[in-house]
Amino acid sequence: MIMVAAMSALVVVAIFGLLADGRELMQQSIWVKPLKFGVSFVIHGATLAWLLPKLRKARRTMWTLGTLLAVAGLVDVGFIAVQAARGTYSHFNTGTDAFNEIGQVVFSAGVVALFAANLLIAVMLLFQRMGETALTWVLRAGIGLAVMGMGLASFMVGTAMRKPRMVEDAYGNPVPLVGGHGVGVPDGDGMPITNWSIVGGDLRVPHFISLHSIQVFVLAVVVLTALAARISWLRSERVRAQLTGVVILGYAALFIITAWQALRGQSLIHPDTATWIALAASVVVTALLAVLAISAARRSEMAPAGPRARAQRDRRAPAVR
Image (cartoon, rainbow, N blue to C red; front, side, top):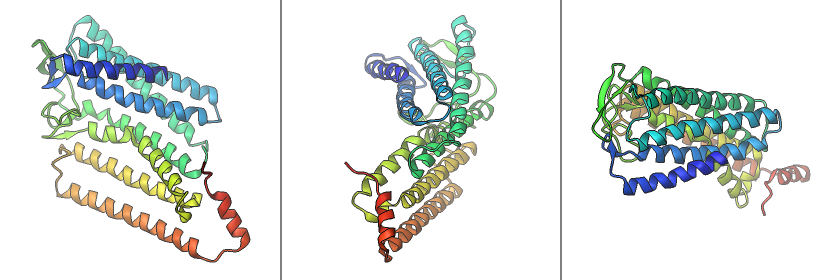
């Protein structure tokens, strides 16, 4: 939560910078990147701060991993903010000034620490149950997808332009960049705020989708639990778990499709026929699975039940204040 507070402060500073500082990098305010990272870490940090205390096994280890993640996040995003204030690039910057050279080493170490901490948390979640089945599975799937998205970030250097290219910092000075977020195209020519490429593949799209999957999944559980107060067939824990599983499968398909699209050098907003077919197929399959789960739940609800079965069903209903 200390990290979350620091990131929240950074968000305020970055918003002020957007309004008061006219310096730009690649036709965008230098404060856009700190703003994006600040918001992202506020969400991810708050989620983990809520999640980790719920784990009953290896609590000391989980505390250590949470602390490692918080420190690494502060270091990495702090470097991004400082580089923005200096009017230069944080990612892929191979400039030879002393601050940048040292900062890039620390920055890279922080990225590895963030990945390792999330990976270990994901592995340990496999051996713990947190409340009802639906919540357990969304937390496992959410952290797991986040780790996959972090792993995908390693392709950002490998699949992007390998040869150094010279760009200008906010003051017009040349800066050498090696690598980038794009596939087949250099960074730039991006959408507002996100800066995702509109002319080629961009691995930041699936990276973003995966990192915030856990928030989407937990929201699905919250919504289903709230609806269970009014919809009788949703009071079964098994039904809610099935519908949550459908959400996880559909969202995972979206992650896979956008990653596949980006790795083929294709912009998010210019999908080809193959991408449209894959997306349509995933929507149809997801909808069909949801319909099947709901139909089975409704049939079970309408089936005659004895006193014992009704009592068991009532005990499975979530408590509503």
